[in-house]
Image (tube, helix red, strand yellow):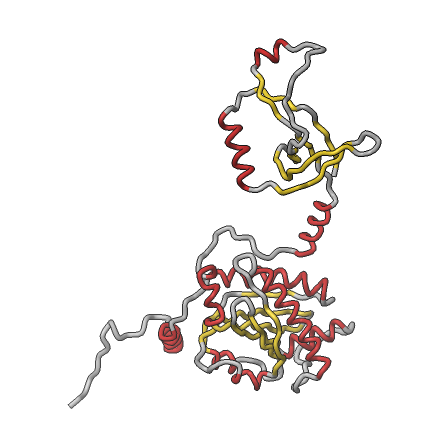
Length: 337
């Protein structure tokens, strides 16, 4: 007697999908991991901005690549970490949780050798624990990485990251529970001919306060950028000049009366001595205050308060109610600030 077995179409594996992929999908579904698409945008922009940061603040050139954020258990992440690298336990203060940043040995020693004027070669990173000096240099690099991460995340939600302790990879299993679901961003770093890696590992529990913001895709969101260009533009803006006008009073006058004016006509403006003056910039009020006369016949302006939303709404309402009214100013004093 021959026993034959048949496999129904429902039980057959889909073409091109291995058992490993199926198990990964089942594992993620059972862990209840919610993917956060904005993290991919944040880390892709961060990879670009880190190149400029390392060039200007760490004195080495590199290329950084990033593909996408992975979602996996903490124990699986730890098993994939270079045992000769460096791990920083990081406090995410705004979120009330912890995370980790890992540099592998190739990244650490390639950066160190380049900073010291050498030329790193692939495969020359020593297979030993990092020394005290190497740990400090790694701490400086991780601080730069966290500054860039904070700058990019802060465009969506408040974020502050502070290094708590520097650990060796063998101590990582004690930082989180083995089954803790995490979002993992792997960035490949090429320094000369050497290829290293940066890993940012954030438990999903830490991301929970920001989950609403990170789970929505904001099309057209501008994150990251070249810091040197931002500083250049900011310095030029701060050094520019604008025209500021002090508007003492405005008066509505019938057009017929204006047509009757001639040289020598006296116009009663009805202004009190304590009349509040508005300081205008490009026709928009920015401050309110009072004028006073100084020695030598010059007038000064004392700022009392800033213009708020209610003031602007009142200005727009008045303009909308009588758009064709003829207005005249008692006096206009202009200053370049």
